[in-house]
Amino acid sequence: MIGKFLLEVAMKESSLVVAGEALDALFDVFADGKEAEKAAVQIKLLPALKEFQPVFKMRIRKEGKGQYSTDQLCVLDNVKMNLRRFIAYQETLGKTPT
Image 1 (cartoon, rainbow, N blue to C red):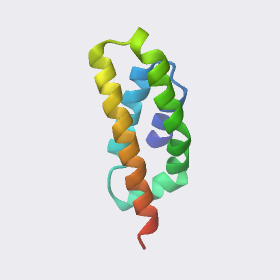
Image 2: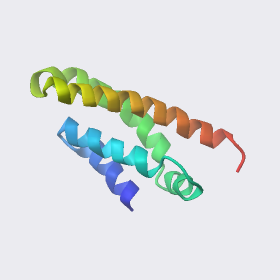
Image 3: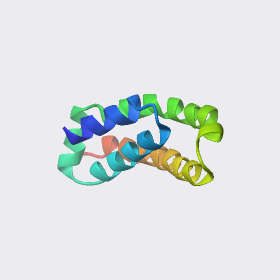
Image 4: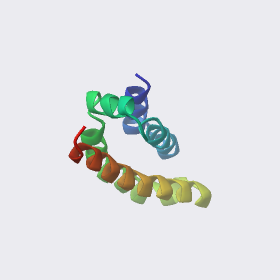
Protein backbone atom coordinates (compact mmCIF):
# COMPACT_ATOMS: atom_id res chain seq x y z
CA MET A 1 0.00 0.00 0.00
CA ILE A 2 2.81 2.40 0.83
CA GLY A 3 4.44 1.76 -2.52
CA LYS A 4 1.23 2.40 -4.40
CA PHE A 5 0.64 5.62 -2.48
CA LEU A 6 4.20 6.87 -3.12
CA LEU A 7 3.91 6.01 -6.80
CA GLU A 8 0.67 8.00 -7.07
CA VAL A 9 2.20 10.99 -5.28
CA ALA A 10 5.26 10.92 -7.54
CA MET A 11 3.18 10.76 -10.70
CA LYS A 12 0.39 13.18 -9.81
CA GLU A 13 2.00 15.78 -7.55
CA SER A 14 2.24 19.24 -9.06
CA SER A 15 5.37 20.12 -7.08
CA LEU A 16 8.50 18.58 -8.57
CA VAL A 17 10.19 18.65 -5.17
CA VAL A 18 7.41 16.61 -3.57
CA ALA A 19 7.37 14.23 -6.54
CA GLY A 20 11.13 13.83 -6.22
CA GLU A 21 10.88 13.07 -2.51
CA ALA A 22 8.18 10.49 -3.23
CA LEU A 23 10.46 8.86 -5.83
CA ASP A 24 13.33 8.80 -3.34
CA ALA A 25 11.09 7.11 -0.81
CA LEU A 26 10.01 4.58 -3.46
CA PHE A 27 13.64 3.74 -4.16
CA ASP A 28 14.16 3.07 -0.45
CA VAL A 29 11.01 0.96 -0.08
CA PHE A 30 11.73 -1.22 -3.10
CA ALA A 31 15.51 -1.32 -2.81
CA ASP A 32 15.95 -4.91 -1.70
CA GLY A 33 14.22 -8.09 -0.65
CA LYS A 34 11.88 -10.69 -2.03
CA GLU A 35 8.82 -9.04 -0.50
CA ALA A 36 9.72 -5.74 -2.15
CA GLU A 37 10.18 -7.52 -5.49
CA LYS A 38 6.75 -9.16 -5.20
CA ALA A 39 5.11 -5.89 -4.23
CA ALA A 40 6.81 -4.08 -7.13
CA VAL A 41 5.37 -6.61 -9.57
CA GLN A 42 1.91 -6.35 -7.99
CA ILE A 43 1.73 -2.58 -8.37
CA LYS A 44 3.42 -2.68 -11.80
CA LEU A 45 6.19 -0.42 -10.53
CA LEU A 46 8.66 -0.90 -13.39
CA PRO A 47 6.24 -0.11 -16.25
CA ALA A 48 4.90 2.88 -14.33
CA LEU A 49 8.38 4.28 -13.69
CA LYS A 50 9.44 3.71 -17.30
CA GLU A 51 6.40 5.65 -18.45
CA PHE A 52 6.95 8.41 -15.90
CA GLN A 53 10.70 8.88 -16.46
CA PRO A 54 10.48 11.03 -19.64
CA VAL A 55 7.67 13.08 -18.11
CA PHE A 56 9.74 13.77 -14.99
CA LYS A 57 12.79 14.74 -17.06
CA MET A 58 10.71 17.07 -19.22
CA ARG A 59 9.11 18.70 -16.19
CA ILE A 60 12.53 19.36 -14.67
CA ARG A 61 13.65 21.03 -17.91
CA LYS A 62 10.48 23.09 -18.34
CA GLU A 63 9.57 24.02 -14.76
CA GLY A 64 12.86 23.69 -12.95
CA LYS A 65 14.81 26.81 -13.75
CA GLY A 66 12.05 29.29 -13.06
CA GLN A 67 10.44 27.82 -9.97
CA TYR A 68 13.13 26.10 -7.92
CA SER A 69 16.34 27.06 -6.16
CA THR A 70 19.75 25.78 -7.18
CA ASP A 71 19.76 23.40 -4.22
CA GLN A 72 16.35 22.01 -5.17
CA LEU A 73 17.49 21.58 -8.78
CA CYS A 74 20.55 19.64 -7.58
CA VAL A 75 18.30 17.34 -5.57
CA LEU A 76 15.95 16.89 -8.55
CA ASP A 77 18.87 16.12 -10.85
CA ASN A 78 20.04 13.50 -8.37
CA VAL A 79 16.54 11.99 -8.23
CA LYS A 80 16.46 11.91 -12.04
CA MET A 81 19.75 10.01 -12.12
CA ASN A 82 18.61 7.65 -9.36
CA LEU A 83 15.38 7.00 -11.27
CA ARG A 84 17.38 5.86 -14.29
CA ARG A 85 19.54 3.63 -12.09
CA PHE A 86 16.55 2.22 -10.20
CA ILE A 87 14.79 1.31 -13.46
CA ALA A 88 17.95 -0.48 -14.62
CA TYR A 89 18.13 -2.30 -11.28
CA GLN A 90 14.48 -3.36 -11.49
CA GLU A 91 15.05 -4.63 -15.03
CA THR A 92 17.90 -6.86 -13.84
CA LEU A 93 15.62 -8.33 -11.17
CA GLY A 94 13.19 -9.43 -13.86
CA LYS A 95 15.91 -11.23 -15.77
CA THR A 96 17.31 -13.27 -12.89
CA PRO A 97 15.64 -16.57 -12.02
CA THR A 98 13.84 -16.60 -8.69
